[in-house]
Amino acid sequence: MSNFSKKFLIYFLSIFLLNSSLVSFAVEETIKEDEKNAVVIEKEPEKLISGKITFEDITEKAKKHAYDIKIADFEILIAKQGIRDARSEYFPKIVATAGTEYTKNFKDYTTSTVTTVGDSFINPYTRFQSILGITLSYNVFDFGIRKNNLDIMKEDTKVKELLVKEQLQELGLTLTDSYCKLLITKKQLDINKEILALEQDTLKMKERLFQAKELSKTELNDQKIKVKQIEKRISELTSIAIESLNWISFYTGENYDFENITVSEFKKPDFDPMESNDYTKSITWQIQEKELKKKELELRIAKKNYLPKVNAYSRYYVYGSDHSSYRDAIDDTSPSNWTVGASVIMPVFDGFKTSAAVQKASIALQQQIVKRDKAIAELMTRLSTMRSNLMYLENQVEKGNELLEELMDKEKSTKRLAEKQIITPIELNDTRVQVLEQMIDYEKTSSTAIATLKGIEIITTY
Image 1: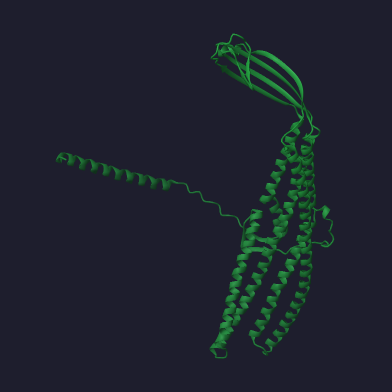
Image 2: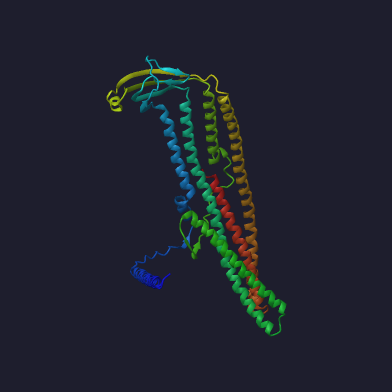
């Protein structure tokens, strides 16, 4: 490479690099200017629900927002379109057809006959041709297959409507469980925070005793461990409560301020939980019976496929053709023929297809009977289990209340002894902690009992 070429290459590269840096600088300045002028849209802070929440309130909101209920509502709308589809079979069918065709014949036929080979037709002419046809057909008689199909769609719609009620029941039970868990953990948190304050106070007193050499290191360590365990328990309860609240948010579509909400008690239902035993009034029974009826109708339809069907039809054709021109074939188009007729379709042999369909529908019917019996057995077992749990819980509430009263009476006596300085403040704190721990157990059992009663009410309300 000559010196001139080298100088030229160096000059060209320097110019290119300089321009590149200038362009880069200009782009950076433009971006910075755009960022200055950009409009920043601030999102509105998410609204959090605070204050008192009630089970009745979240239930009403969940009924409007829950995804399963919305999906079930769409299932009803889809089923209603199935009714429209089944009803369409009662109307005549009108079909319009149009076609155009060009045939090139490589042989010179002297006659106008159409040659056939099996199911194939050979046109003897080279020609353009076009056709327009309208066919009207009607199912005159099919031994009630159309009606049975329509009845199946009607029963299916009723099933979907009942499934909405069943979904509402399941939603109520789910909310009862989540709300009960939230209520219990909120109570436990409040009580445990009070216990923590007492144990921390006890720890301070024991530290002074340890410094005064009136308490062993082991006893002080035990107290520190007790405080740490309560702190750990509070953390676990907070996590459980937030999880329950998150699920309530999922069903209601609202967000809650955990630190600033108060969870109201359940309203105790005023009804006899042992009264309702007629499972034939339950939603589960109604759904299973309608599913059974659908299977019976499907079996009838399968059996009727052995029988003939009578159809009526009418056709009207407009036809045109020409040997050499497509346009002339269109111009030649004129009414060709009109046909009216009826047909009877009688199945003779279908390779045992109808027989297999009948057997399949018959087996499906027997299967549905077992499904119905299983569903009712599950319902009654569930109800029986809830009732036995309720009896146990009510008994535990009664005994827990008696024990709580005894402990509270003990606490009063301990206060009097502490005031007279017969016992130490540490013993008074220990007695108060015993009361609070029993209160935790009592509140948990009491709330669970009311939630169980509420669940029985939801299941037995049709």
